[in-house]
Amino acid sequence: MATKNPIRGGQPPVQDTAPSLAITPEPPAATPPEPAYPPIEPEPPFLVPEPEWPQPPEPPAPEAPPSPPETSQEPKLFIVHLTPELAPVAKVGGLADMVFGLTHELQLRGHHVEILLPKYDCLRYDHIWDLHEAYSDLWVPWFNGSIHCTVYFGFVHGRQCFFIEPHSSDNFFNRGCIYGFDDDVLRFAFFSRAAMEFLWQSGKHPDILHCHDWQTALAPVFLYEIYQHLGMTHPRVCFTIHNFKHQGVTGPQLLHATGLNRPEYYAHYDRMRDNHNPHALNLMKAGVVYSNFVTTVSPRHAAEAKDQGQGFGLEPTLHIHHAKYGGVVNGVDYKVWNPEIDPYIPYHYGLDSLDDKYENKRALRDRLMLADSDKPIIAFIGRLDPQKGLELLRHALFYTLHRRGQFVLLGAGADGQINHYFWGLKRQLDDNPDIHIEIGFNEELSHLIYAGADIILMPSRFEPCGLTQLIALRYGTVPVVREVGGLADTVFDRDYSDRPEDERNGYVFKDYDYSGLESALGRAISCYYRHPVEFRELMRNGIRQDFSWNHPGRDYLNIYHYIRDK
Image 1 (cartoon, rainbow, N blue to C red):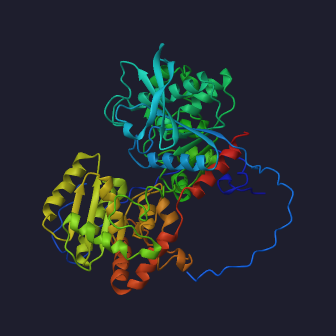
Image 2 (image 1 turned 180 degrees about the horizontal axis):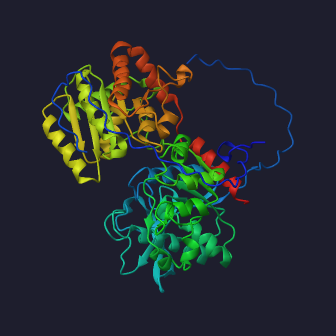
Image 3 (image 1 turned 120 degrees about the vertical axis):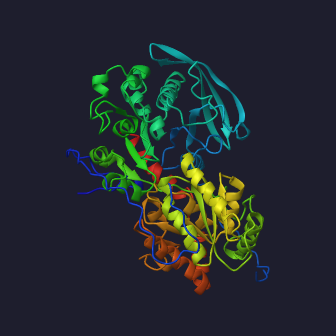
């Protein structure tokens, strides 16, 4: 008899022993051909109350016996998050926001939560309160010796955080930024070993160790292969994969560095050996194998990674460990992203004051020197990365002009060639009063764009969760998205969804091509012009929906309680 997955309550199915299934990834989508309609401009090749009356007093009720003290049926947990990022002190992407939001939700529910991360020299120290030395003599085994570390404690917006600082000529975390170095695998392997050593030496025995991405994937290996034999038998591990594309593939020298000195044992296919390169180790695979439960950041993406070629080579491993694998959609911190209290927008608004959103639209136009008109503003906010569907993004810009809209782009990428292309596009269109391209990232401006735009565009090739569409919904900005990953789990098409009408909140297209994009974006623009009442109801549907951390927090606690006694 089948049993329930722990993410939504109950127990997960018992893992079977079927052999792994080799999944052939789907070939990447080719750039689709341009449609035949005449573009508005030549397109260069893309590189890349009633009153209250007094009432007579009621007779006093008989005195009841005192109630017994309330007791929670759910035990409180000690949870440690091991992470390379935490917003806002060390943020590169959505991982930082996820840890920030989830840890606060767990605290609100009465659980004791601590966070361990490296003490980068580029931390936002203005967001850390009462930073002080907490553990001064931590020696971490490394190669044939050990490295001395100091551990600092501080509060990050109420969260209890420990920052590990190694004193070594390797200069692991004093490099001005978080990622992007040839020795990133060794840097974060050391952090994982240091974190486990600190938990053991300080006598901390958490119920749950929650690790994030390949940078901390060695922690469960160290726990079960080393520290469990030293008496650290209590913790159970939840491992969250935020992006399958980056897996921490490295050579066998890692084993010698970290003290995992049995290469023939750890390099076995069932443990750490990469699925495609027999001479390489895969840290993310190790995290999947050694953890008690594995999540990714939406149910749809969990299925896509396992069965539809988006696991970037980990598909066989996910099939073997499918009984301990699932997806939980990330939440949004409504204390940060909320148009009713947002300090970065000039006019606050909500369901009962939606007209003030249009005051923010005027403010956005003034700031970006866009023409004042009745046109809708379509926006893109995000990384300029191939994952985000750059071919379709560029096409959407010209299509928006063709359909009498305005377009705002805010983004930057790590690829110099892509940045160079979009700088060229910016120079080409700089004099157009209906276009603004902003290369780089500006937190204040992003809030104003969410508040001032009518439509947000996300034409992603793949999207594990996506926070942009969730934030946009809260701001009453209608999302147009591709039906993939977390976008498919959170955006429901106005015209074609089988959801009740009060749950439909945007426009969705399936295929990665120009016609699919034009269908969804065209329907959104047409609704804006021809059916303004219906478009406004879409905006209200988005604002009403709850994508806070309340539901994901409950889901993760279901997982924690399932694995804690394993």
